[in-house]
Length: 353
Image (cartoon, rainbow, N blue to C red; front, side, top):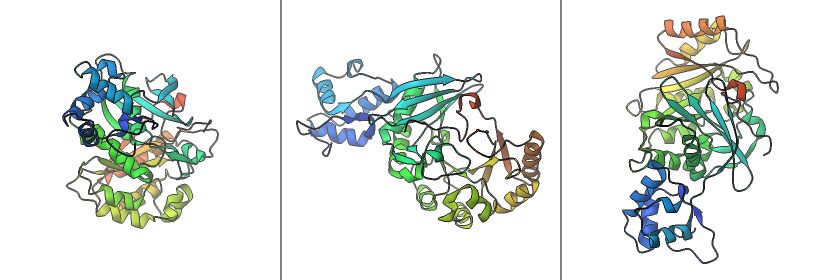
């Protein structure tokens, strides 16, 4: 709706998840209600996960009728789901315009993480990523981002909660900056999801203006950089974004990132056989990250028949990690989950779009 007060008679209801708590307070005031109603709505939507107006039983019928008039509460539709042997669940969701996106629920020993998308497809065209092969169809709204977490939370075992959210699904979050930040604020709102900023990570392929802007946001979620190349030429071959924002510019933005805002910047580095997995590359990576408060998340490449790259040998992976550790870097090896259902890093793509 163009106005946060009463819409025109022929307008279509808006998706309520597209609204911040402050915007809902403004809407409530505009229809003759108290602003505190927005807190109740956030609690029903994101704490109690209500999916119908009728379930909001501490709201008057009159107020629920106003809500039904102005907003839609039904979520984006899950049209398929697959479960891997390791407990990972990937869901395919259809948007109102027929486009489709994928999201993933990752099961760990003692908690769950969700991996969510910010776009239908992606414009970054990273050579090792299936999503990049789709091209960019459109941005997701903030509500379409938020509803992925609601959909995935409905699949949790009883008495289990999501602990971490990672913006690492389909799309480049900083190409959809405003909607990404709006969804982040909804996740952090203490009247709704009430996630800790330490439990949310936003990943970028290296959009330097987005990194600089994100550095000064009030809500201090974690930042992850998809690096994957240790020279400008190597990164350009793998990630065309380097043609616009060079490796030097990217690292300078990271050096200027306010250290008091987050503990460390995570650098995601995909190990591809014969391409990025040599000890020579490990040495160069140590040099590149000197002076940056960094953690390196190593990811063994997940092979796909549609792409040319190969998974690295385990020995090469261990040597690479050990070199980083021996030279003072925090370096973890991500245990890729969901490979059997194409839910692992770089494997999300929908063929219908």
